[in-house]
Length: 414
Image (cartoon, rainbow, N blue to C red; front, side, top):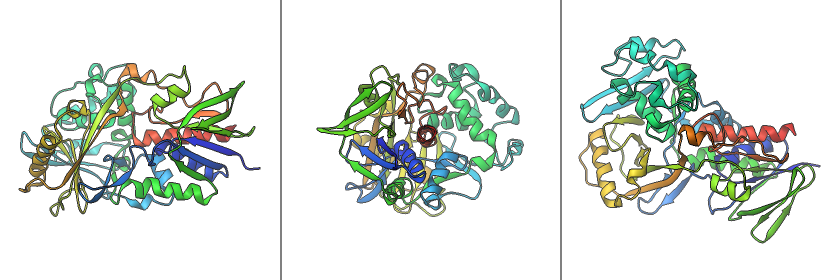
């Protein structure tokens, strides 16, 4: 008899666990509380722009092993597009200076000795000053571990860590920052090639996963929120979906891949982060000019990263708490002004949409990181997944998929 695993939550964490388990022969039942799947990693039609847009702009790197393995398993890895090597375009709006960071494939960082490949106005010694991050404790602050000033920090390290941790970098966990540095810059260019879902996140990371699970006898149901769980000794025996009760067989399991607030409501006593940070994304219906890089880092501007697609231009602002209450029309115009400077265009404000996620990620501080739980619980058939659990990474797509893989592996071991 096939074992059944119930996945509570159809975000990228829950789907990655479901895909892994369905591939191993389990019957997978995914239950999503909302009316859409994918969580913060989804696409949808937007009437304001008359486009299909992503809820947020997400960058994947060629070294994100768990994400790429997941995409290969569901047959969509070809939808992640990027340059043939690790190159990143930047512009400093205050200095009116442009450059392209080009990282060589080898782990030996030859690129830092080439002034044409590294950040302007930096020296090789500046890069080796980042070494303390590689072995830093998660309880240490970034601001106490490295120097958070100077051209290298302002033009590369600060923007990179802000995007990864979604917190003002000096206040962030040095250990989490170190994990990012080890898996990207220290791993060489072969791990740093940027990859973007050009046709939308859902088409690459979500829809193929739903098909994968259903084609193997599983199901994905939306609009069904788990309200409570029943226990007997060290096992979960049932859970409620509204007025419906789902009974578990003796060999069945549950993967709880819900947001931290929902997890602590269902499992009193489970530790979870309590503070969160916002991310602001904006999308504009405007065909980008020829020759503009797929992604551009912006220094000394309101926007931080500009992404271009065939029919739109989109931006991301991390650590966006200061913008969540800004009037939408004013914010859209200010963002568009920055885009025009970066793209070298002069055009009136086109149709636009702003997406503000107030609780986008947990606050990646040492204090909040210490509250992240592991994947196991006191119940032998109940496991946790989510980028807010203790993945060893900040709240990234790689961390999300890694958490789902870890929960699935624990089910397989039992």
